[in-house]
Image 1 (tube, one colour):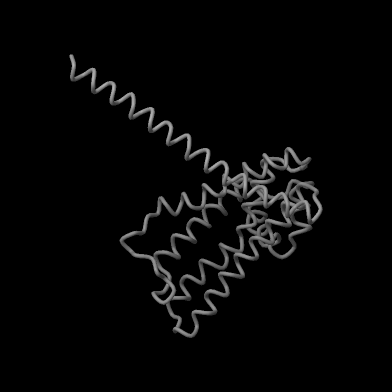
Image 2 (cartoon, rainbow, N blue to C red):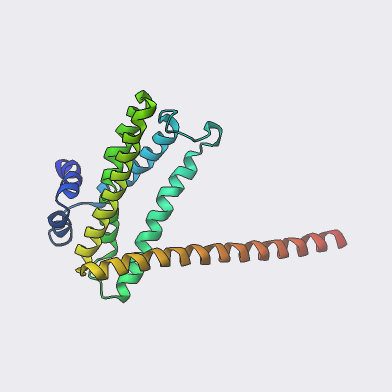
Amino acid sequence: MKQELISFPFQVIFKPFSSFWDLKYDNKGSMKASYLLIAFTIIAFILQKQYAGFLVNYTDPRAINSIMDIITVVIPFVLWVVANWSITTLMDGEGKFTEIVKVTAYSLTPIVIVYIPMTFISRYMAQEETAFYYLMLSIASLWFVWLLFVGIMTIHQYTVMKTIVTMVLTIIVMGIIVFLGALVLSMLQQIYDFIYNIYRELLFRT
């Protein structure tokens, strides 16, 4: 089990089609590993902001907030999983909710294995070498998108075009969820202010 916890993420990044097939039909992968990969991704972003070389790090040290770094990883992850599950349920997708979680988490592997070492390598880079830093981060991001695409296509048993449409719709639904969430929070804030003002008015009158 421990060996699979370490080896399967590397299997995913080099053999995504067969690995995601095994994830769906042979029960490979685990939720524990998925949570660890999410945690490592958060750590990767926190380390990047705090320890990347000054030539590539434009973050104001006074503005660093680890809580916000956690939120900027966890919230999009949750939104993606919920939105994709909602869309694919309507579009005859065969993937389960837990499978979407696993696929999305395992797709983050390139981010972890590239961002963390490049953060520390960047501290010793000269100005003309920073292009290599940005190239590696771009490769990691594109690799993540490719793995996510293959994973979604495999677990839902979609064609290439249907997978593309599904992923675009997922992003749109994520935006709708954020908009509705902000709208609900705004309404709750207004209701709270209204009730609080009435309470204060009654308090002053008695």
